[in-house]
Amino acid sequence: MVKTVNERVVEETLKQALKISRVAAKERGKIAKLIKTLSKKIAARLIESDYSLSLPSGKRKKAIEKYLKECQSEIAGELSEYREEFQETLSGLAVFASADAAQTINAIVKIELMPTAGISKAQAKTLASEGWIGGKTVGEMFSRLGDKVADKVKEFARKSYAEGKTVQQMTRELTGYKDRNGVPHPGIIEATRKTAEGIVRTSVLGISNAARMETYRDNASVIKGVQWVATLDLRTCVDCAMRDGAAWDWDGNPISAHNFLYEEPPLHVNCRCVYAPVLRSFKDLGFDDFDEMPESTRASMDGQVPESLKFSEWFESLDADEQTEILGKGRYELYRDGKITFGDLIDQNGRAMTLKELYETLDL
Ligand SMILES: [Zn+2]
Image (cartoon, rainbow, N blue to C red; front, side, top):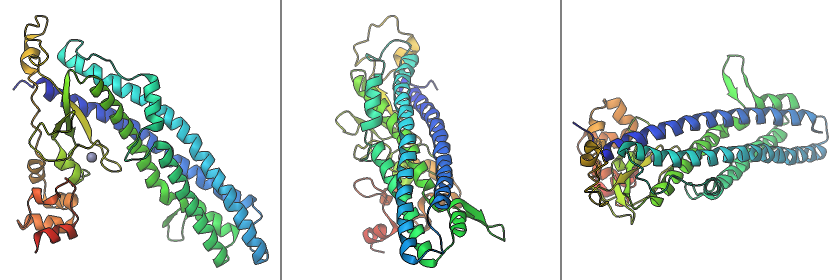
């Protein structure tokens, strides 16, 4: 069957999202490396510090306090240096994602349909520095990360002080080591690596989504709304999977059969969802007599919201282990035993319910 224009738009949007997620993977690698480097620097600072187990406890405490102050500025410095570079990347990415979105549509319909070609460099810069991702700017996320890393070091240093650890013991724990049995013990601040990677990934996806959305809105005369596209795999959360295929107009009213509230991805940290634009029909655009239009495109630009593979159909194609992985054991069992349906998994706001909430509604 010939695909409609809007179906192809969804396909191409998924490809765009894939490109963006490669950028995200690269940035994740960079921040992971930064955390490692930071571990080494913090350990080196301890060796250079006044701290020594042989000092009287009062002086030892003072040395620890001084060391922690130094660490804090080291952490803040390193992270802000990375953040500046990262925001440059985000800004470039926003320009790219936006232009890509517009060009893709033009390429599909084979005419210069989009009134505007994408956001400006200045807009992209503002987006990268002031855009909200899950209610926070990139700068705010990084400053929280800095606090988190500094807290880890503080907690560790104070505990080490109380336990009378030597500088050698402490540096080993700061940088990470393998014990006699070959079991690796990651460095103290390694625990923040996942958070750091999450921030980077979510920012990359969030800012590029925002840039695409700007472009769609700027072209609202030809785009009637947006459709939620989730990457359906075992890492997809129920919240996101349930929304797959749902579409809204620019006023946030559903234009497909669903009752989710309009929200913009990312829905959560590491959310990989994107919005695909839903183009108006050629007829709506007053293009009935558009002679230069290739006939195939003319007919297939029907303004319909594409049907998506239903989460339920996809879910049923999985085996029990995979289903458990997505729903969690408790919810999976309720589903398997026919005590709940897919609809029961979410509350009236479209949020996935915890097992406890489910039990409360089911009165089991
Ligand atoms: Zn998602």
